[in-house]
Length: 356
Ligand SMILES: NC(=O)CC[C@H](N)C(=O)O
Image (cartoon, rainbow, N blue to C red):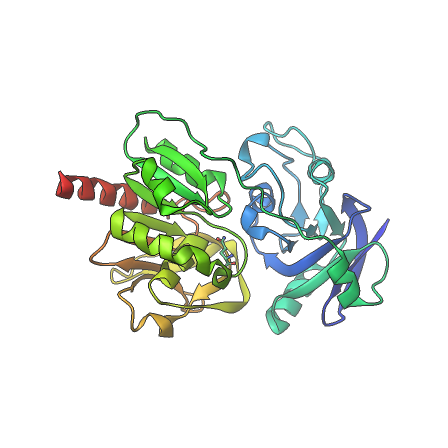
């Protein structure tokens, strides 16, 4: 069964339908350069309503392991691959990627020269795209007609009182499971709450620290939550990852801008300021904090991206606030940035001693 990938600029590729064969997809087309971790990528809620092109040519070859999903639902609109493996050679695999996509009602297309798609996006920027079973005749009308997905927020609260310390509340903007797991693995009690909760609701949990999670979309659309973030920063040790990082920056007066084609991959080098140490990081973002906008704020840069100089980390020196644009929880990707969680817990412990 044929499938058509059509961009807003009229460029078109056609290939073979995979996944939910009869479903169409519509959204922003991006490319991910990761050589592994396709399941964690597809289940990352930050890809909500995006079409994911995998540059690595063979996708699906180690199947699907139910223990590595980053969320229960799949927010991505579609996947675009060169070759879809119809086998799943891995001891942890319980099904093929094709079956997983069908079960999650996710369409896809195989047989695409994903290098060609990627060079097009690198040259002209990420853009709107359609995945359809017929050639597109009216892009705008067809694009508008395809339903977009909503984030599936989890009910209040997720996480049971365990008496573990420190107690961390995660504001869930589309949280990856690995963030929660990284804190639990360090002995924390973790309570995950929808990002719509008030400061007062968070205070009832008597947290020792707050973490703002990753999440989809343009950070400029979250202005309603900035006053709560500012108040949280003045009251608790605060950390942010990816979208959480951007929202902390905006809460303190910075602004964000859209990158030409985002950073979506597992080998993005970031350099620490001022040590100069370099780490390879997993990244998945289309926006970044504008360096010019932090000049008149108390924010200080802690990490920069070595590929394009963009900001990858911020701190507030006189408050226990730290945030990173990259994904220290990995899943997928390299684990070397996980020290971020240790530093956050250390700042909570220092705060507790200072307030004792
Ligand atoms: N992974 C994320 O949190 C992404 C943050 C934001 N939606 C961006 O695309 O830049």
